Length: 87
Image (cartoon, rainbow, N blue to C red; front, side, top):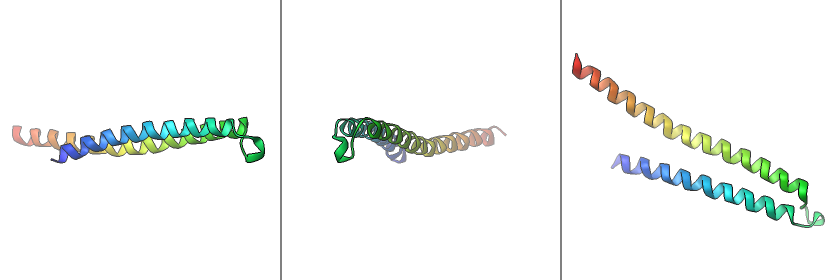
């Protein structure tokens, strides 16, 4: 049951990264094509794309880092158990 939740979390994180990336691209494009009088324009649109891209990279990295720590801990416990059974 634990593996089901971890695998589900992995899929949810992947979906979240895709949705965040799409939101950044759409937000950047909307900002680019909004009138400069309304706070939009090409430069603010690029800023949204760059800032949002960095945000998605950092958040995705931290989320996958947490899942990686879990996987590494699980493999270490299994290896330790195999060594204990040998000797």
